[in-house]
Length: 432
Ligand code: AMP
Image 1 (cartoon, helix red, strand yellow):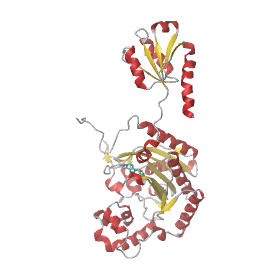
Image 2 (cartoon, protein in one colour):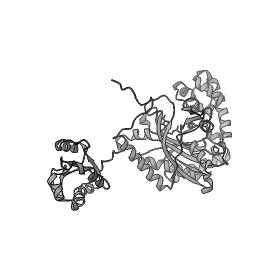
Image 3 (tube, protein in one colour):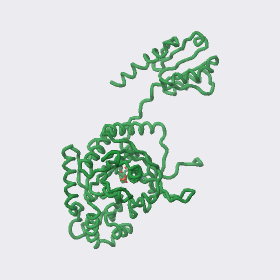
Image 4 (tube, protein in one colour):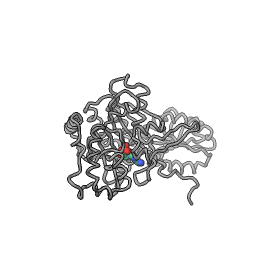
């Protein structure tokens, strides 16, 4: 029987058991970001459609096919954000963040929305965590952002990651290179997919993004004259210098990287440095994260000419790739408060006081002691605090240790000490 309502296609629920793994991953990330002295920014999940149309580029897949675009009741043209950088830059301009310091180091995390065809590792609502350095064209910023990117993956337990690198130069480089690519592909035009043929006219670089097997075959260039032109050969002098300095910086930090001449990134706003990390075991949707420099973006959005560089990482895929390496956190040592008919009424205030210190469960339905003890077992609680009629009158509580079945009666005044004594040995064992 299928329920009447299901999560919309391409979205999913993260249930307890799964959320602990997410919390762990988010906590690891936050620690690294704090050590890098990045500060969190939270921007709205929807913005003017125009913001994304401008920043991502009218011809990008994201804008053409994947946007959750809608009108609100006043007819405003809005869209759910497909990525985080445009909103961050909009906020940077709107609040004049440049006045608060030459260089801003920012991070964000949250859901993004793209109307793609759902498949393994591709969702219509997915989470990204990202970082941006806004305000400097210095290669040191690219190097730092890539080091941070790599260190996040390391904190999550990934090993031997290789960062794929390319430079997409300036808009001028891309125009020149796009034209070279178009000319090179021209003899094979008829064998390209309909999409790629269209891109050949509007934005030839986008052809390099194709996933179509036939297109990929054409791109190997076996049947074309000469090797495929490379973007790096089309770089202007400054972009070339920038590129050399970024690579030297990565070498100095011993960050594994390889050049991928086909890496162009999906969005139009990138300039110079572009990078990605893949996990081949994930199959077709293997990109875990990527980023690059976007020196023209803030100006394009109506701000002062201001360079920036950043990345975003897809948390859904990253956590999938981690499998059970993202540990579900052990439950907090839990107490279960059990009552008899005579003490049921004191339970809420007793539990409330305990909850200022411990994670505490108790029965809400006035069930029998027997049923409460079964529930305590199921809850994963370590200790049961049994409020017996007679004991309660004497100011005593029965402490039952579910790990070994032992039991003691303690004075209310000595309760916390007795609980801690029972919980502590277990904690120190876990830490070893
Ligand atoms: P992008 O800006 O498109 O390179 O996205 C950055 C990262 O977000 C990718 O490397 C993926 O890990 C993740 N991502 C992008 N689109 C999706 C999606 N539809 N579902 C899940 N993750 C995604």
